Image 1 (cartoon, rainbow, N blue to C red):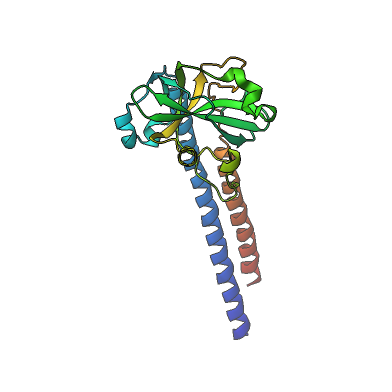
Image 2: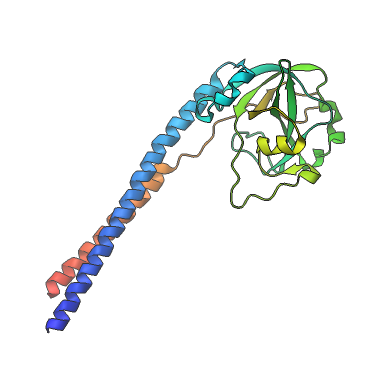
Length: 249
């Protein structure tokens, strides 16, 4: 009888530890989702505010090393620049959550914009579909001479575990990593950021620039309710089990 009682006591302790740990983890996940909800709402508000402002002058070249992504990304800017003929890099895209006008796979066309005061800023001139990949198919889109570029400051993307390897020999990239593109293309003195172009729209319409639209999903409250619900369910199951055990005991 003593051995049986000890086994029952050990089983009850193990089940209690499992239930308490599980409930704590589920509640922690719910709280984390609530924190993420606050973070997402603040991010959306920040992006909406910055993208609604009028363009300001591009930061001077000597300030580039001190610019921080959190403080400068998605700032709208305007600056005069020249695009050297025949220089571009193609970055594959399956679509964009910030560009609802971009549908289906295609490429972002990156080009070096030479500033009057020296230095280069890489500009994402816009989207082209797969059948416009070759520059000859959109020759009208060249912008000769100095043009006034309006766009949004962005920072290079981080490479993920499943991001395909770039193919510089075929001028094909799978990540908007402008530092890697500039190094491969020998576009020296490039800024640490790049510009996502809004204007001008080139003759012929390709590449297709456009305004960014904030459309980030915010499902964190739903996720939090799910985690809290699972915690409550686990607590209920444990309570029923414990009550039955106590009755039998």
